[in-house]
Amino acid sequence: MSVMANFALNRTLTINVTGNGNGTATAAKGIIYWNLHTGVAYYADSTEETLTAVAGTGSTFTGWTGCDSTSGTNGVTCVVKMTDSKTVSANFSKPSSKKAKHDFDGDGKSDIFWQA
Image (cartoon, rainbow, N blue to C red; front, side, top):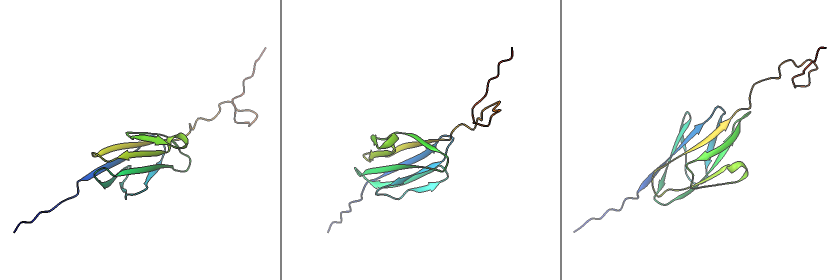
């Protein structure tokens, strides 16, 4: 009598959220387990996963790193083929909080005055 067991080879996908903005990523197939700004998901070998970046309020998605390919407006979609464990990063930024200096007329722009 012989016993044979086949185990699926699991791959780990690590997703980092970077930048001074905030946001997250969603997965089309897997479940992402988040711990602050880092998420992990597990896949069978050769699974192709599609991640979508979702910017938080007041933030802008600025790009992915580590993807096999990206698509969509601003590259919001990241595709990875899990032939090995991989790490990707979604970067988010916040607009500058600098306000116009010397805005005398209240239009949000700096005003320049010349004195003769």
